[in-house]
Image (cartoon, rainbow, N blue to C red):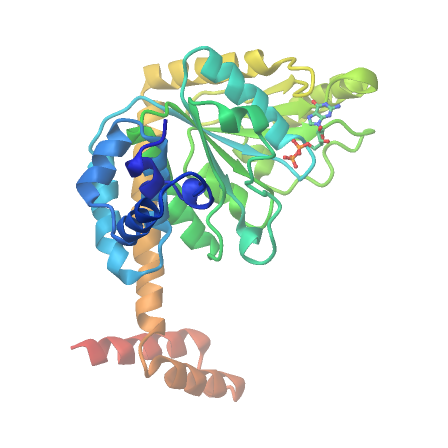
Length: 361
Ligand code: GDP
């Protein structure tokens, strides 16, 4: 039964004013204008309250500078909570069956007592409605499952912005007790590389085609994959899927062995018939056990965190210089000099940076 608190923090109840006395509605509106204290958010997240988890993620996504410190505090508190989780990246072209797959995998996992969070990374969502809609109609059972949490991609953001927010959202979900984090992405631009840099296991979903399986795969994706699952291996497709399996297995052998000792696998599955999904989960568990034993699991997470830090420093340094008032005019001067062959591009870059650094003194 929803109480006043639920109405305040859960926007879903905004429209369900029916039956609520007018004075209560105005109280709700007033309370909603107030910000939720960070202690309440943290406590709620630690207790696994999905509404407050969603509010926490909204805070991370806020572009209001007043929210930055609060968001950082929240992430810090959540980071301090130690958890045992597995982060799985799932990629594949639109239509390959990502949401169907996640729906089946997710419900299988919740039925064995796991708590599953699904986050989407869709860099196209700022331009259009995006390829990953993130609406609840895609994963109908999972979205109603009390042990699942689904969050669409942050929109209106550069890929760097989406990356930060998704990484931080993972931290919040884990603090809320979600032990399997599925990060879904569609193969656009650099989004796969970005998701790969924040997960423990990277799964590529493919379709079986008529001998053209290896075509149209972006360079590097095969190398990143810890497993390839040929989806829609059902009905007339079974034979074609077997062929695709052989072909991908052969292709994967051409890549150098992974540093963590894991040999990427190729499997077949059907999200529609719920076939092969349990096997995929068992393979992922096997991966987690093996790489934990060798220490690679932890090492990978630490490396990812260090890279995240370094990347952020790089990005912010760049931003810092670009924001300097004199940057643009000095850059234009250099470009003109380069066009006129008056200066070497390398020397021009050095001069520009030296000038800007001088201004800092
Ligand atoms: P997404 O765009 O990658 O998220 O793909 P969807 O999960 O939305 O699936 C695209 C279409 O493929 C839908 O019509 C699904 O019903 C269908 N589909 C998904 N998985 C399977 C499968 O295992 N077998 C078959 N035959 N169809 C599937």
